[in-house]
Length: 159
Image 1 (cartoon, rainbow, N blue to C red):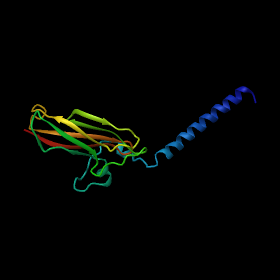
Image 2 (tube, helix red, strand yellow):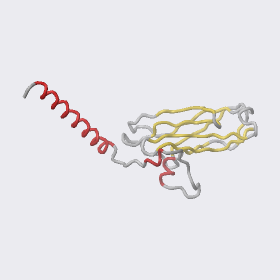
Image 3 (cartoon, rainbow, N blue to C red):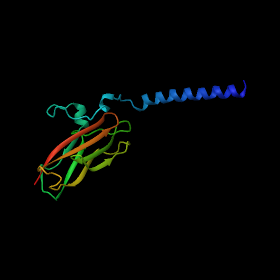
Image 4 (cartoon, rainbow, N blue to C red):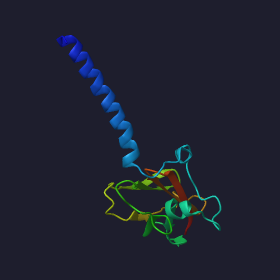
């Protein structure tokens, strides 16, 4: 066999092995099957009185006072799901974001190691300008690597 033929065969063999190992790695590293429809849009709780198990562990759960004084800071906690989201190296929350209406207020990023509980407490201060109607909407977003982008919201009265 001449050198040129050997190099062509070795290159093709390497490519074939690399592609097949990559395809195999997808099956072994992510044992939980991913539902592609969860990545097509923003996921929200459809019926608050009848939440599915997926909604109970993935929809952002916001804990905030019902009424706050303008200009005074207050705590807003955002956890992923009412029951808490399981974290592992194959299934994790990438981040939690909090917005006041459409205005970003804060963000926390998580590692995929599985050591943290996906819960964050933000210190927020609303002004009269941020709630011209007297009510501000706090919106939380989170992204799960297997179950997509989720949103939850709560209204807070500003006096």
